[in-house]
Image (tube, rainbow, N blue to C red; front, side):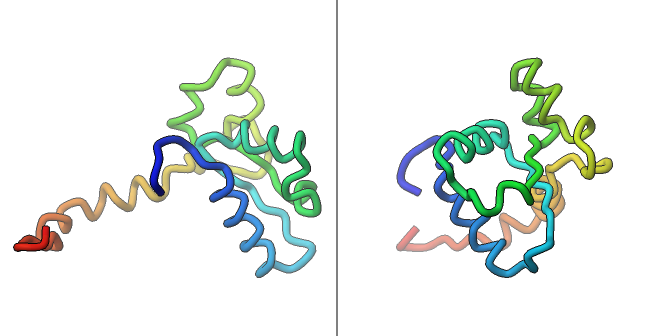
Length: 112
C-alpha cells in the first residue's frame, strides 16, 4: 500500500478469492468499513456480478455512526438479517488484546 484511503480493489480481490474456495450455495455476510460504497460500486460497475446475490453487505458498528442516517438504516448490522450481535470489529478486538506483546516483538538496531 503506497497511498492513503480505502482501495476497493483489495476488497474485491479478497472477496473473489474467498468465493473460489466456497461451495456454490454459500451466502456470506460481509462487514466492511465502507460496505455501502463497495456494494454500490459492485452494482454500478458490475464487479463481482456472479457473487452479488450471495453477499449481504453491512458496515461495522463503530464505522456505521460515521455514515449518514439513511446509510445507517440500511447497512447497520443490527438492522440487517443474518448478522446477529456481531459488531464487525473482530480484528480490532484481537489487536487490542495483544497490544502488550508489541514492544517485546519490536526489532531495533542499525537497520531500523
